[in-house]
Image (cartoon, rainbow, N blue to C red; front, side, top):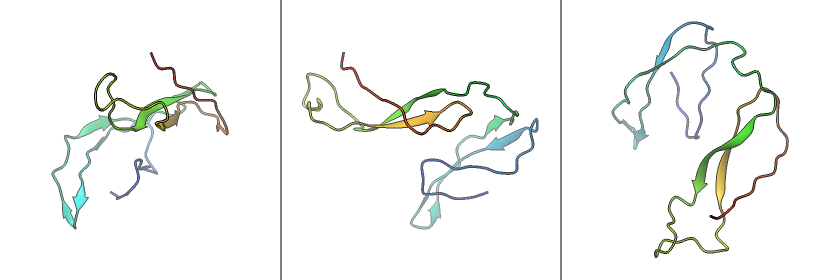
Length: 101
């Protein structure tokens, strides 16, 4: 269907209410890897009725760090998060903070 080198891929021109299957694979040095197991999904119109619903989707960097071990993060370690707009309204700015427990 398509290729991307990004962390996301948008599929266009789907029909609401129709069942689709997708799977992914990697391509390295021109060779395609095994496909993942197929996963079904059905597009639904206006599935999200919340306008302003933004949240942290995942922690992007650092990949590891465990307190009280040699991989513990320093107090100056920069953190990167993937923020996702779960709502239906465009978001221009938001405050993100991290609490170390």
